Image (cartoon, helix red, strand yellow):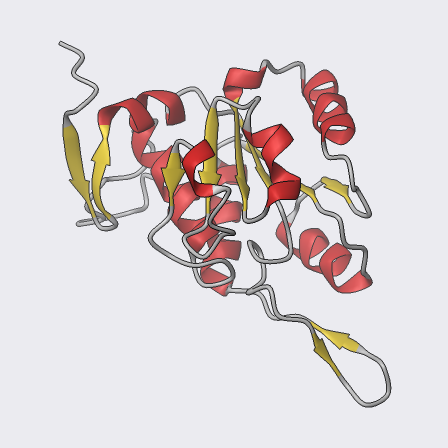
Length: 192
């Protein structure tokens, strides 16, 4: 029997059954970059080079999704080679940089992958992400998002952007789809 208030315990804490129901149908995770894949800080050297840091656990979560035939895409307002290189190393094929209006690339990805909006999860951190967050089946904000974004999402991560938030969402999707144990005890060789 379905009870939207029923929760299950995970390593991230209790998860509402409604969130798990939404995550069960996800075939594509779209991530913002700055503040989600990275910690939101931009480090600039004296010679003008930009440095960003990425979390290896987020990267492993992305690789787990891809291993399980769940696509991952990036739509971001920024544009830099560092992100392009990181996506390439992770096997992310769909990367849209320099996007001030994220709806256009969102619709393009859906058409390419022949997916419906309810099959998509999106994770963002600021108001530029809101138009896409309002369309997807599972809308997620990192815990250190802009406060005005938080009332408009289905799920707020426990982890912050650039510090494991993407991994948390990847694990949530895999748990909902019974592709990984919710408590992570035992042998994980059975992933997908």
